[in-house]
Length: 128
Image (tube, rainbow, N blue to C red):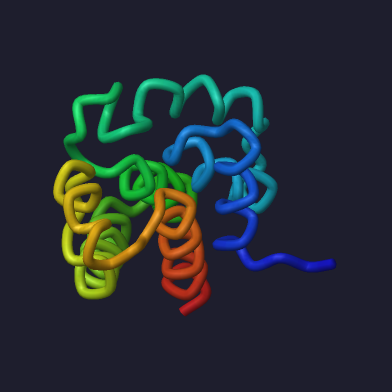
């Protein structure tokens, strides 16, 4: 069964990855990064950067993937992240973990949902 990157990110999160790891590892195979390396790199980015509830881990994980995909061209990487940030904010209301968590009462979005949203949005951006 083929999963979207979002579905894979959700699966990764539900099976022990933090949110940043979940998104980054969903794309590792595409960019030749070892999963163990990705897990170590993203280890302290979950829960809004080490539990500080700052920038959402799904967002930092997505930005790491953008670096893998477009990092040889800083302008293209910045443009891709800005597109991602705009789309993620439009859909979910914020890029900030504590704000996303506070909105959960209204939105009913879980961290697994945000992992899926980030993976699917990033997949669309990188394919365009």
